[in-house]
Length: 119
Image 1 (cartoon, rainbow, N blue to C red):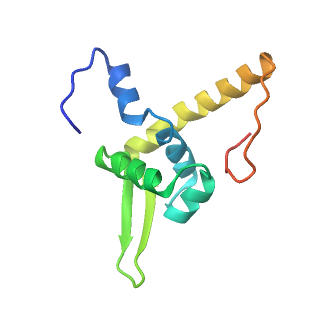
Image 2 (spheres, one colour):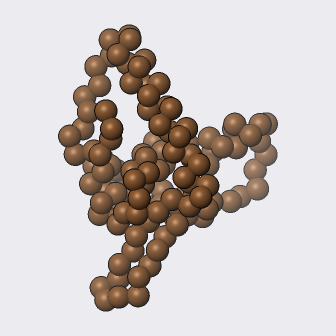
């Protein structure tokens, strides 16, 4: 990770997991090891290029682990590291907050049927 200046740990944390897709990748990995194709199905609107980029960035900071099996054809899987797993309760709280807020202010959320997101 590049050496940057941060004004607080919150800013540092959101820099690592922020953006449109990283939290969705983490959310998709919360139930265990997945292959690239499974992640792509769980996040249908992400492009393959962006998924690969987000996985590499999360791997670089030690939140996601890439597992390469020495078989032909190559088999690659992804899983959360211990630091990645520590984020799941935070993401679950954020999910619950969003659901509660949307319901209380009458915002309709059109849940994507392909996504494996708990309602």
